[in-house]
Length: 225
Image (tube, rainbow, N blue to C red):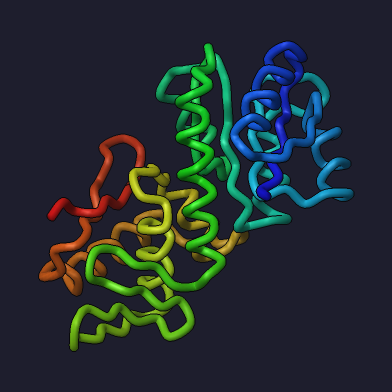
C-alpha cells in the first residue's frame, strides 16, 4: 500500500482529502505546515507528498526545496489557489512534479496521484518502456527492435527524466539543478544544447516527442499509434 503525506493547514480540506484517498486504497499521514511535514517524514517515508503552498511556519515552496535536496526522487504535488503562470513557474522551479489548483476536485486529485506514483515507480526501476522503446538507465541505452542507441550521460538523464514524467513541464533551471546538480553554475542554455542533441539522435524514433513550452521549458509526450 502506498503512503501519502498530505500537508495542508485547512483541516477540513485535509480530512476530506485523506478520507477520499483512504477510500481508494491509500494510506495517509498528515501535517499542517512544512516543518511538521519534515518531522513526519523522519518517522515515516511517504511514497508521495501533497502540499499546500500557502501555509504558516514553512510554506509549500520552501518545503519542496527542502525535500528535493534530501529526497531527489520523491514525487511532490503542490495544491494551491494561486493559479498564475508565475506561481506555477515558481512551483516547478522549486522542484514540484505536479500542480493542482483549488478548489480541489477529488476525482482529478486521484488521477494525478496515480500518474505520479506510476512515474515514480518507473524512475526507481531504472527502466522505462515508451511505445516500442526501452530506456535503460544503467546502460544509458535506448533499445527499439534491433537498434540500440547509447547516449552520453547528461543527454540520457534529460531524456529519461522527461519521459518518466510525461506531459510534466520542467523549467531549464529545474533540469539544470536535477541533472547537473544544485551547485551547477553553467548557463541554462546548456539545457537547450543538450535537448537539441537528443532530438537529433532520436528524431527517427516515432514513439515520443520532446516539446518546447514557450516561457516555461520542456516536456515530453508519448506519440499516438
